[in-house]
Image (tube, rainbow, N blue to C red; front, side, top):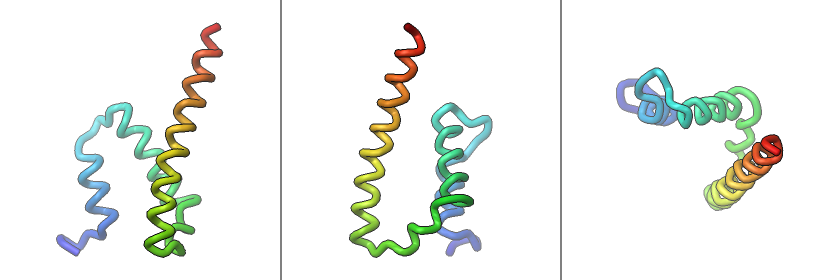
Length: 78
């Protein structure tokens, strides 16, 4: 570890450099907090192959969640 920081801490520093956060960083930070403190600890049990599968499926899921919210937003306009 460089500078006494974990890999996660270094990534957080890289991703969230300056405040105020823009809209993307705000949302990403919410996902980080949810994963870190609430529901993300099961990831430690995945082997490297399962972790790759998880990342692929997560990308598909995030896309579907985004599309779902867009559909709901469009319905609210009508």
